[in-house]
Length: 483
Image (cartoon, rainbow, N blue to C red):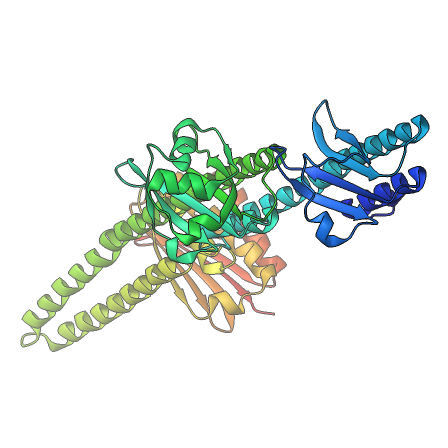
C-alpha cells in the first residue's frame, strides 16, 4: 500500500508483495502473476529469487511439492496466483502468504480504479476537444478527428469508422488509421461484428478479432493474424446509427475490458451528437446563404435591372431628338450617365453583400439595417456607398449612424406614403448620409421627437442635420466631421 501511495506502477507493487511473501516465509523464491480475462494465461508476472528461464515456464496451472499456492481473488473471482517455494511452511507462514495474496488483490483493485479514473478523464478531454473543434468550425475531417483521438486515448494501433453505403446493405470503412490502405473497404452488414453493432446499437468486445474477421470474411491474410482484442461501438444518431467506431489492438497487447467498452461507448455517443449538431448548423448556414442570395437576386431585379432598362429607353429618346434639339439630347445623355453611375454604385453594394457577411463591417451593418426596414416600407430602398466607409469611420460615429438610418426609414414607412426611397452613405472629408423618398413631404404639426433625436446626434458629433420637402418628396441630410 505504501508503494502504491508513492506512485509506483502495478508491476512494482506486485514485486514488493512477492518480496514480502518471500521474507515472511524465508522461502527460496516467490512468483506473483495476474490472469487475463479468460484465466488462460498471465498478463503480468513478477518473480523474486528465480531465474528468467524457469520463470518463462510458469503457467496458471503450475504446481510443485515444495510450492505453496495462494489464489488472488477479487469479487469472488480468481484474478491471479501467488506461488512461494520453500522446504516447509508453518500455519503462521501459510496465513502470511494468504494475507499477501489479499494485498495483491487490493492493489490490483486500487490500480484498476485509478486507471479507470485516468482513462475516464482522458476520454472526457478528447470528447471536449472534438466538440470544440467541430462546433468552432476548425475541422474539415470530422471522422478522422474522432478516430485519431479514440486511437490515442485507447492506445490502439488501429482505429476505423464505418458508415452505411447508399443501399444500406454494406458498411464502408471511410476512415482507417494504422492500416491506411484499407480505407474504403466494404463489409457486409449481415454476418459481421461491425454489422451486428450497427444493426442492434449494442457494443461488442472481441478478444481474437483477427480470427473472427478471417472466419466472417473468408480472409486468412497475415494482417488479420496479427490482430487481437477489438472494441466496437455504435455512433448513435437518433433512431438510426450514424455508423460504427472500431478499435483494434495486436495479439500480444492487453485485452480491452468492459470498463474500456463503457468509456468508449460514452465517448462515441458524445462525439456523434457533436457531429450531428455541427452538420445541422452547417446546413442552417447554407440555408441562410441561399436565402441571402435570393434576396440579392430580387434586389438586382427590382432595382438595377429596371434602372438599366429605363436608362436604355432614355438613350433611345435622346437619339431621336439629336437632330431637332441637340441641347435636349445632351441633357438626356448626361442624365443617363448619372443614372448609370447610380446603378454602378448599387451593383457594387450588391457585390459587397455577396462577398462580405461579417457583422464587424459598417457596410454590412448598414445593409442589415436597411434590409430590416423593407417589411415596414413595403418596398426595397436603393442603397449606395461612396468612399472607404469600412475603414475610415470611427466607432463613435458608427454608433450614431445606424440609429439615424433606422429612424429615418421608420419615418418614411409611417408618414411618407412613399413607393420608393434611396439611401446614400458618402465619405469625403466628412460623413454624409442622404435619404430621399417620393412621399407626401413633411406634414404640418405632429410629433418631431424622431427628428429631434437625429439632430441631437449630429450636434453631439459637431455635425449638422437638415430635412426639407421637395417637389418629389422629402430629402434628409445628416452630416458629421471625421475626427
